[in-house]
Length: 297
Image (cartoon, rainbow, N blue to C red; front, side, top):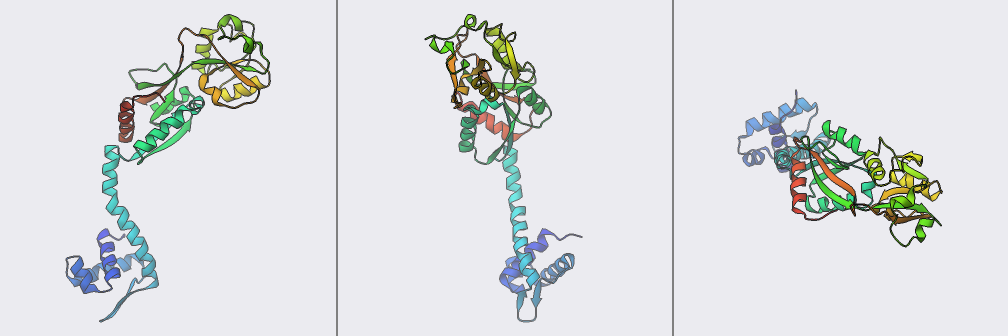
């Protein structure tokens, strides 16, 4: 058998008034049913909570401890309906965000700063994963929002272009590309050893680079999935690498960047991605707010 909220409220009133008559008046009830409430509560708890005689009411040691917990439980009970309404409206809740490692080089931080400022009651839970993993996690309802690379199934997912940037060639100290005095072109790189993107775990970048520099996959000496790993290999002189412009924010000694001439000046895209059928009200609030923010991140 469990105690009721009504019994807790009765106990709280008596504990604060230290008088059954005043407590009953405060609760707009008579004294006998209030006394029965307290007796039932003590039986459920298995401890005497109040010492009472004809003139005085005092809290026992057990009653002092129970009073603090009763106040906490009643506070939670009183706030629960309002919290439920706020969660239902999307003003309070949780949004789980999947993101690619490269999006942390500026975009992710600016995005969560904006959401923290505008929607402070929505908690953001971050999960690093490549685009393929994000798509699976969205389908399985393990995340609510992705920062991912295209293409996407437009029937299943909603998306919005979040950020666009140039493609750079990362080269080691003393590399001859640094002396060009211009952007690099595909022909400049035909014989270069390449630290290449994985065709499975970094498919977007792999396809993008091969479309710009067809010899890149043929000249690959290493294949990795993370841009940071690529830059360390470039610093070690293992080859050149093709990376998004935001990677230039990473201060790695011995690595320099040359812009790659491409048909589209900023071909690297990062999109917000979400399930069209998501049932998370907090996600709806996030998307509504971002739709009003007319800027790239």
